Image (cartoon, rainbow, N blue to C red; front, side, top):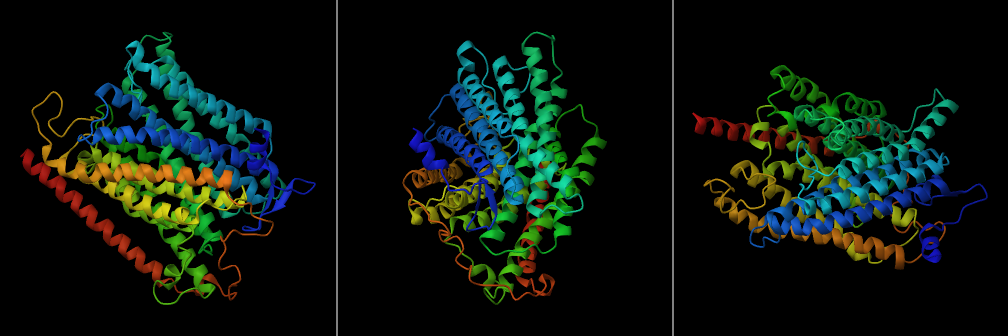
Length: 576
């Protein structure tokens, strides 16, 4: 056991506990690296658990298989949702904070005992939530879906351990905040590096989301314990969506921070304009969490003014920030590669990139698929009128798989592929499989997401009922016309889940059996390290490739926006 732990955590450090990373050139302290490994490995375990339940969920929604009865389906759906949307993401996001803070700044991780305590509390909370979900129906209760709406009969243990997990995440984030405080105290006039700044804004958004979650689950907990007689269901919903959608905003900012980091290290990107990129992060700080409003559009307790403000003026601030990053990141990649003479023409800078590297391909697929699939649809369903055609349909499931599965998960896979070589100092157990995984996952999950959206928007298939093809339970309304699309959705989803299993297999196999990389060995992550920039200003570089990509993105956005309004008009016509 000790040998296995030493195998995973045993790098060579100097007398002060530092080593120089051969890929990034950063001075990395042992305390930072080991805690990043700890949280990242735990995240992979949560992803594997959630992925296992994705098989049964997908196999039930595809009614040709119908693996589970209705009551068992909700239990498996809850296990899948909590482990993938919450535990896999949040454990990885703590790791991202440690990378984006003390690692990039070349500092020790302060309060290491606090970091470990946070990990222990988070694990205890995650285990408790999983246990309470799995056993909820044994006593006649309800399986607590991710929303856990009151007044469903949900065990008090679920709410208690959900609060415990959120408290643990807060404790685990404290060392990051202390790092930022020490950095600014030592050099108050020095600007934080962009990656550190992005991680800092991420942490603030995380605090907002966690406070909302503690308020919601704490409110439900005291009701389940009998301390108060009743709860206001409308108030609970508003509190819940601070964390329910807020966790996705943490994912978004952590993902974008990873984009800036990995495109720079592996792809040779530069920052086109730090001020512009920073301004986008600041816009997120004030407006991004208001995107949760689209979950509440059908609630009768909210005024029309509140709905209009949150889905228009406030929402535009977050959408504008996303547009800035959508230009800034590819622009930085194009400028950096053109400075190095890597590819001419309109897209030579992109076609000449290291596409065989799973770090690079995961990152770029994350950027493209999040933007075109998750990002655009988020703006569409966040618009007050269009939300009526999306709300609680299978298209909503497609949207958050487009953001979490295609966007954040691929970005985090890129970071984990990167960590295998830079932190664990192991070569991939199979370079061929490692290179193929991002392509397989992007293709299969991308197809599955498109089918979810198509089925939801055009056929109105609901999001949470597992048996809908023959008829909606309790009615004679038939959705059988959507059945052929499930023959595409079902296999595509199962193949995507199997690709996720392949990722876990390659990652774990690399840690256990991959060849040890020697000092100074970059493991092939820097195939262009011998090239240098010409020293010219980034603003003197033509970015016509990025401009063309943005025009394509804009045209896609306009086309989908017009299409969704057309479909909404058809609904009104039928109603008339």
